[in-house]
Amino acid sequence: MRTFTRPAAVGAAALLLVGLSGCSAIFGAGEPERDAETGEITEASDADVFAIRVGDCLESAEMGTEVSSLPTVPCDQPHDSEAYASTMLDDGEFPGLDEVGTVANDYCLEEFATFVGTDYYDSELEMSTLSPSEDTWTTLDDREVLCLVLDMEGGVTGSLKGAQR
Image (tube, rainbow, N blue to C red; front, side):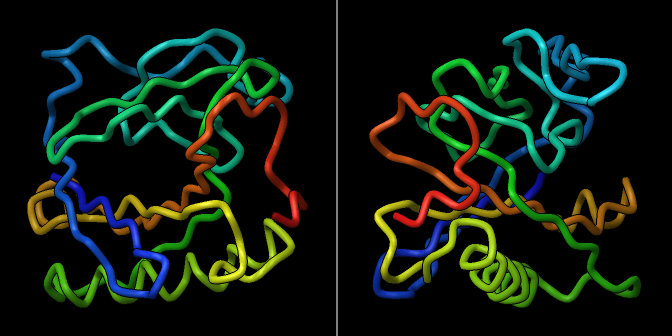
């Protein structure tokens, strides 16, 4: 399981679990089709959450408490979210969901302003994170925090980089 976090506009974090642990074989999701040169997604498909990269565009719809894949689309097609930053957490014992969530939110909030061009708390866009759970930390050596920017209205074409909204 990975942790999916979306802070509220006033700064409190709501924590939802995104279940992963080896489920891609059950659901058939894997690596999305990508352009060999640019690495950009070329076909809409469900992708294993571990296959999502910075720059990928998603049609997140309603993310439940446990998912193993996310719907990806080429960025020139309508979508509602985009992976905009990634960082690796330090090795060691799993620090706990609260600590992972705090570190993930702090990092993604800082990167949000750089990517979007406006502070998160002044933006009409939302932010979420995908980060390790204790299970993926232990069994898959998962240390990545992936930041997602979301336009709750949907219908975005292209990147949200520099959107300043």
